[in-house]
Length: 430
Image 1: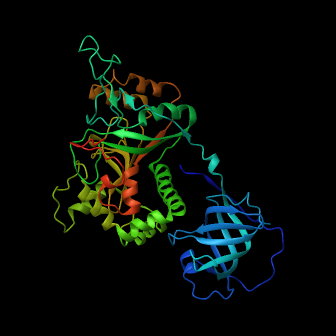
Image 2: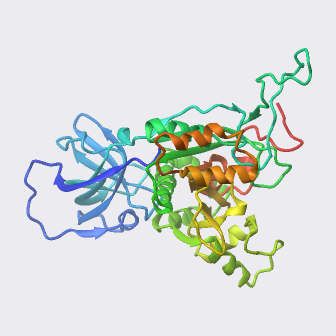
């Protein structure tokens, strides 16, 4: 799932048979190919990424998508093509004829005459190691104090004693544990439940939800981190659309008409980037009246996030470099002024607002030591500080709320409708 690293290689044909000379093929997008009215054997060229491969004894079926359509184009090829080279995620250029499809699921399909691999993609060699981070922890990763404390249902002998000898909580993030493991495995991720004791019944908050989190060593810029985040969003979404088209279509048809076009718009455009300072200026100049007045040094609210996405043409937008005072101790100091910021990034998406949150981590010992001392956290996080003493490297990471991701791609307004057993304040049914 995480950023399968596709290595660009020289163009090479998958067919050993010589291709007969024909007039140059017309280049079509997948959307145009699917909408072609004429299927009289016109020779065309389609470029895109392989979303699925199905090999039979005498025929090979590929589904190709280039981001121009949620629906993929079915390519039918002779079994002589080397299916081992045609893997999920590989970029290809296919030349052949558009013909009427015998299947009821699509009007046209492409009969391949030539397939060239533009870039291989070995998803098994993505380099990310799956870490099962603990659910019970003594760390408050976010520093917000919105924690569920874990205690035995019946106190053990002395009520003041802690079961673990230290206060323990349900995790709000696996980030700190991932930072430990990234020192051994370079690229790590986790996917599991997280908990926030927020007294909120809003449409975008849950007390228990799932998060995908990643931590990457030797990352030195937010741009490197943002590339992984954008690739994760687009790859995961195309995989969902390829494997669960009926489920997605059901939501788009009956719950969120128009969401299909919005999603296509997100997938085909490069995500944008603005600084927190630029975001505040945009909000201040807006004609819209906000419930919360936008000011530098104050957190962006949901209404602000949604406005910024609309302002950017409903394309997902990264907001970077937040005020130091707003963010946890582990985020890297930008050493700027007079407005002191850290290397933090949030990804805002249409209809939801913040979907991803991430940062470069403060890998410099003395910077981290001074910040922990100012916050009175040195003793509690001595182990974390020690990580910077023994072979520390520049690194960064991010987290994505899974339920908010489902809201985004399906167009569902209330987060409680994308999880079977929602937990929120005053509600824990079953």
